[in-house]
Image 1 (tube, rainbow over the protein chains, first blue to last red):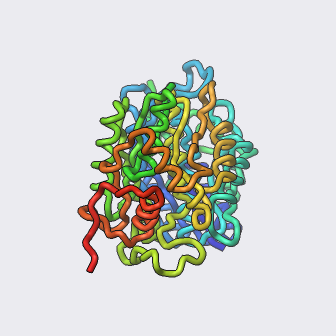
Image 2 (tube, one colour):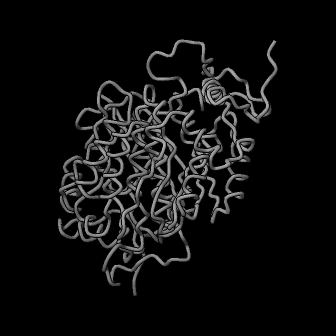
Length: 223
Length: 223
């Protein structure tokens, strides 16, 4: 069995890749860079993890077109990254329109090209409120499009083991799998010491605190 | 009303853009280059057409990752482009796995970023036999994924006016709209004079012949 794993280098996708490996899949790591501020750091983490897992391939794809389309703080430097203490009404500013639609489409192309059986994506339930393309109904609809739109005889299955889990549950699973979280990166803002206050840092730290464990990555000292 | 039009520079997508304009849409032209042999020629045609239509934007996106994935004569120079006289069993060698899934995902991201109401894609019935991601069922399934995976209040509608038409019918429609076919390109092989024998040239010439009209682009002289 062989699976394309979308591996950003963050804690969720890293836990995902370890989960796929535990299930017996050979890993084809697909790392997408879309002009986010912390691109280089995330790539280094993803490549390290792929190496540790003995991945068959590490495929890095530049999807800079998200920057061309704009409309997200992740790719447009003129939009400030949200401090988690700001209002969280509606769709987050870090929303990239239909990002998971694009990620899945690419992963499916890659999977079909390499005769892989599955695509793993780390969507998870705590994303539902803000990101419409993280919902299970979206994944189910996309699976139907994949079934109809690919030529492979056997299906390419979209695997979303975390879709009904929150970040704390994912972390608990990852610790059981000995995931080396020191080689993961989540901060949207910084690449050396994590800022600790962006949305991504906030939820990461919350998960570690919930399990009473210290996050092994460095954080900026706060006054 | 505003629509993203996938505009390759070929006769179908050009007729498509003219159709969208006739329906009253402002055009956002999305031109994708994926490392095909005739990339520059196609871009020049697409840009000319966008200009003639007064498009709001011409967005060129490099989707070179198809080459990274390989597995198609369109992007892999080691696979010969098929002569139309060769056997046509099964999926054509020019098949790029899940290409339309990728194209639609990008177009939807672009549409949502620009608050566009529709995405036009020139899939058509004569592609069905070989390309699974040209079938109406695929488009319908993808529409469902778009409805669930985007945050825009009003839907983004996938428009496939040619999905039940063949190339001759598309050409007839285009001639009625005064589409300038001299500024379109279809050949998979050459950029100066069309080869006349690749699959794409074959179907193009067949459509012109069926209507008793001469194709205005140059072709290689054959002995």
